[in-house]
Amino acid sequence: MNTDKFKSLRSKKVLVTGGAGFIGSNLCEVLLEIGAKVTCLDNFATGHKHNIESFLKHPDFSLMEGDIRDLDTCQKACEGQDFVLHQAALGSVPRSLKDPITSNEVNVNGFLNMLVAARDQGVKRFVYAASSSTYGDSEALPKVEEKIGKPLSPYAITKYVNELYADIFHKSYGLDTIGLRYFNVFGRRQDPNGAYAAVIPLFVKQIRNHESPVINGDGTYSRDFTYIDNVLQMNLLCLITENKEALNEVYNTAVGDRTNLLQLVDLLRKNLANYDAEIAQVKAIHGPNRKGDIPHSLASVEKAKNLLGYQPTHEIEAGIKEAVAWYVDNL
Image 1 (cartoon, rainbow, N blue to C red):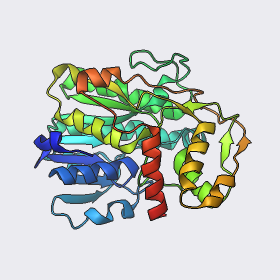
Image 2 (image 1 turned 90 degrees about the horizontal axis):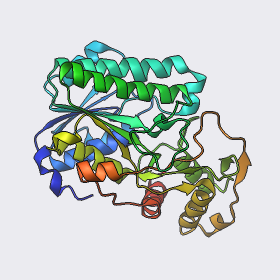
Image 3 (image 1 turned 60 degrees about the vertical axis):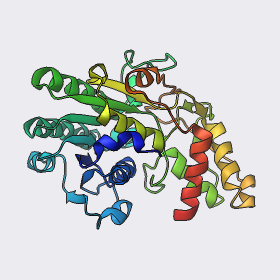
């Protein structure tokens, strides 16, 4: 991505929590390219050392191994930082349904610890990963930031609580915060393994192995699949914006388009078949709908465009092409 507009971040100190994860490691990488001084805080519960291996010898990168559920760790991590990009969380709706207590401990208690530490250490701005799951049972399309429904999973509740806490910390303590409601982010370094792998890397792995990907339901559920470079842009815009009206808000972080699961499988199969012709014959199979799933997800990104100057660079076709190329080279 073009980083010229983010030159003001050079030499700034930025803490990335969950910095060894999928989105976090990409944020670390682009910040180092810009010339920022990056601290990665991660407990490696879901992140991976190999995601940050190439940064470990970089003079402007430091790794702090620790857990956001420990307030002292959060205080030490925030000390001297200009900005926090808070990505650390336990994702996955199914995981939260299986173990709501741990999801709450990490996503709510850990989030509160980070807010307290950012306040105490004088952090200038706290940008955090919110979630499109906050829209819950709202059937309105496209999703507009000011109109949400009731949450459909413990995970969704935790992410909504994050927004409420962030708002209170601004009003009560003057901490500037921005929440980014991520919509089905995908791209390089997204883990295809494990019980809670996201749909795109999981499907890529299955299709490459000539296995039938399992679609939950009839395949008509749709998502606003968002390539990682769009997410990086949004985070960086939140750090550099001087528009006071843009602060202490939440923003959809998406493309503003939707793709259903049948279309997604076709797109993945088409791109992967460029590397292995036999993949064109792989067929999908169908399983039951997942509990807690939102049927359709489509974001309005007008607020981000108007207040932050956001312009998505990758719609799904371009993103899938780049992601597939990365998976072919790295898996």
